[in-house]
Each structure stands twice: as C-alpha cells, then as structure tokens.
Image (cartoon, rainbow, N blue to C red):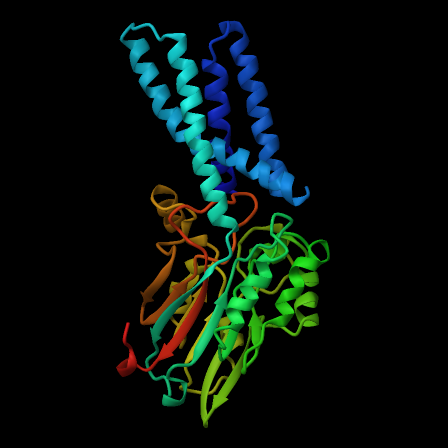
Amino acid sequence: MIWISLLLITVAYAPCSIGLSLPVKRKYRPAIALGLFLLAILLQVVLFAGILPRIPLLIAAWCSGVLVFSSPFFFLRDMALLAMRLGKRRVPDKMLKYSIAAILAVAGLLAAWGEYCAVTPPEVRPVEVEVPGLPEAFDGFRIAYITDTHISRTSSSLYLWTVVCRTNALHPDLILLGGDLGDLKPNEIRPNMHPLGDLHAEYGVYSSPGNHEYFRGFDDWIRFLDSVGIETLLNRHIVIEKDGAKLVVAGLPDKMSGNRMYIGRETPDLDRTLAGAPEGAPVVLLSHQPRFAHDYAKYPVSLQLSGHTHGGMIAGLPALLVKIANRGFVSGLYQVDGMTLYVSSGAGLWNGFMFRLGVPSEITEIILRTPQAVTM
C-alpha cells in the first residue's frame, strides 16, 4: 500500500499546484485545486480497476503520466515561487501561466514516450549464469524466463503473441513463468491470454504465481494455466534428467504478509518444496519477489529467478526507491550468500503505472554454465 500511496500523492501534487497558482482570483483557487485533485484521484482509481476499453485506458494512462512527470517540475517551480515571495518580489501572472504550460508540455512528451516504451513488446536479454556443481550435460542449458506480463485491457491482442513468438524462436530447453501474468481474471482477458498455450520447450513450461494472481482470482489462474498445458509449481519441484545428470526446478507461492487476499492460501515452504530432491543436484528456484532471497540462500538453491520490481520502471530515483523497498534488489544478477539471484525487469507493466524510461522490458534467456565455461 505504501507504493500506491506514494503514487497517489505524486499524481495529486500537480493538479493542486496548478489550481493554487492559476492566474484567477485568489478566492477561486482552492476550489479549483480541490476539483482538479479529485479528478486526478478518480483518474488513478480508473487505472487501478482497469475495466475500461483499451483506448480510453491508454488515454487515461497518458493523462496520469502527465501528472506524475510534471509533479517534480511543479515542486521545483513552487520552491522558486516561495523564495520570490519570501524575498517580497512580485510574481507576474504571465510567469504562472507560462510555467504551467511549459511544464505540462514537457511532461506530456515524457509520458507519451514512457507509455510507448511500456507497450512495446520486450526484446530478448541473454544472461549467462555460472552454476557451481552444474553437470556437464547441462552446460549451455537454456531457460526462457518470462515474468510480469500484466496482460490487461490495455494490452494489444498482438502483444502476448509477440512475446510467445520471440520466446519460441529461442528454442529454449525450458520455459519458466515468474508470475503476475495478468491484471484481471483470465475469463475477462481470455482472448489475450490464449497465446500462452503456444509456448513450447523440450523440457516443458512451468510457472509460479506472483502477487497479482492472488488479487485477481488465484484459483481461476491455476485452472487457466493448467488448461493451456502450463503446470504451476506450488511448494514443489520437478527433476529434469539429461544424459543421466539431474537438475531440480522448484517453485514457491508468493509471499505477502498481512494481505487478506492470501488468507487460506499456501505459504512458501522451501523445506517441503525440496523434500525428496536428488542430493547434490543444482536447484533453480522460482520465487516472484526478490526480497526474500537471503532467506532462500540458506537452502541448497543454486539460482533464484524473480521479478516483481519491473526494474524500477524509471531510471534514477524511482528505480532507487524500488531497490530500497526490495532489500537492495531491483534488476539483474546478484550474489546472495553463495546463491545467484536474477531479477528480471519484466515483460510488461501494471496498468496502474504504465511507463518505462531507461528500463526496457525483457524476455530473459538464462544460459546455465559450468564455472569454467562462463564467457560473459
């Protein structure tokens, strides 16, 4: 909830600043500011719900982006105006009017570009990972990792087809889905979700849930994935055998303490998940949120695959805040107490904040390597 609160504050600052500084009679400014504030909050609630058709939602997302990107500029402008007033210097009405227009124009361009980057299908990002003890038979084993597609009504019907086609073109040995596949129940966006059934790899397609599956019909998502041939790993593992060697792939339920959507659901239990796994075999673990990596590094896990952060969405301060909220993890490879963690920037974006600047989406091609074979 803290991130939603920060987003609402950011969205609301710009309309309040505009309303209180319009070149109109002072007695009207508070009422205008309140009206603009309520409209901004209503706009964001509409985006959170995601129930409008695609085009209106995209327009609403752009309007929200204008408010988000303009807020820092309005804050700096307001500090400058405050300094002028404290210095008893008159603030010309033209300055107020032109500053509002200039800031909104810049914010509009940033929002348009950020939204374009968000809706553009992800490119493939190859990543080589050194796995201690990896059998020679698995050297070069390729895992296509897709997470955080967040399919919703804002998603083009071709978006997931493109993701699936680019993934299949890699001819991966294994495909893993890391959660947050959609932002509505499957039956509400079913036409856009069906391409998942066309994913194929020699050793199968498996998934583990993210937090959004819990928010939008957890059981419906499990049934849907099963109907298209994708097996969900909930506190359990599978064993992949190749030329007599073994690789363990395990999956955990998502973990979010105190949320009512999780009541009555399985909680992550890595002891149970790895029970009966072949001793000494490398373990690849699917766990949606990276912030629990230090807990899982205490187990014989070689590689944890996570998402959830979207890479911070916007380079700079936003990405830094996301990193802090996720215990220092935001995107890329990390070494965590002897375990390797990879955090994907995600293949899509939540419709509540649909922008990327400097943080491209990705389909990750994980290439497992024995220590002596690493070239990157």
